[in-house]
Length: 142
Image: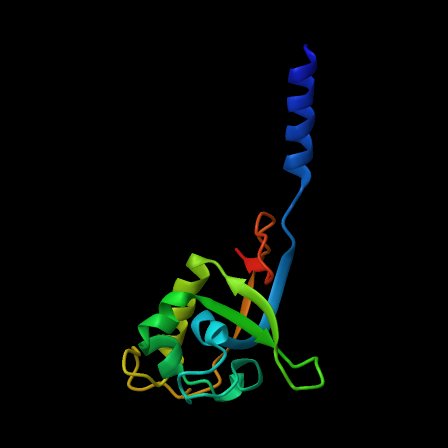
């Protein structure tokens, strides 16, 4: 066997043993549009990282720019200013699942139930593997 073939086999053996870290995270759902603009759309103007508990399901689900931007899960504040921690961002499948969940339990125009009980402060528990190839500042959940 030549040196190239041995190197390829060694690389294959190493890559097959590397596994993505499994995580389970519970926290508030926040859309990336509101985070990136530095202010909630609803209720208007509030800093998103310290007001996740009042962020409306209407904003998360009904507002297209918010829904299409994707979601993150914010965990309890750890800094002195009361800002929630940006724990994980969801991948496209997770975003789709979050829209379905929001429509099922939320009180919004596009919600599936008549109407759900959660108006603001949507919380969720997400479970999955961290994307080992993601290089962004917030870990991505697969």
